[in-house]
Image (cartoon, rainbow, N blue to C red; front, side, top):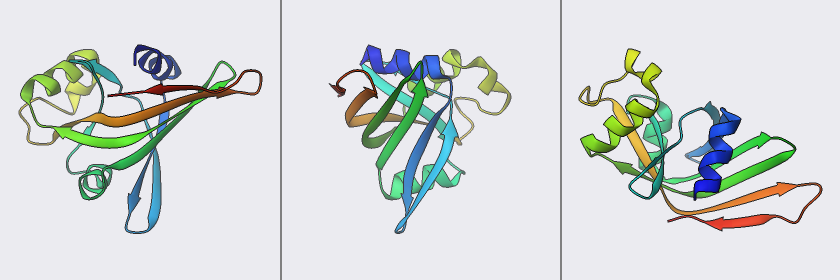
Length: 131
């Protein structure tokens, strides 16, 4: 799990794909956090991405860096605990201009049943099972 965290953190930006009805939706993201043994990302509950994940939790993340790319798939599980929101905002203090732990909008999603595959053109793919 730590390898996936470090890869995404180093990339800075990754692309998160969700489903809306029968259409894919992809957008750039930049938050990734390790909390209580899980990987988390953050968004606002008022945003379409949160609504899409709540309606259908299946997602995929893709990022590229240093000649390698990672794809992470799984289910996004909303963690509504204040502690999880606080941890995320401490990891990304610049978000505190837009979010707070008790604003009713800040949402953190835990990656559940995740699988990450790190690939390149020069080495066999590496599969990492996430919790």
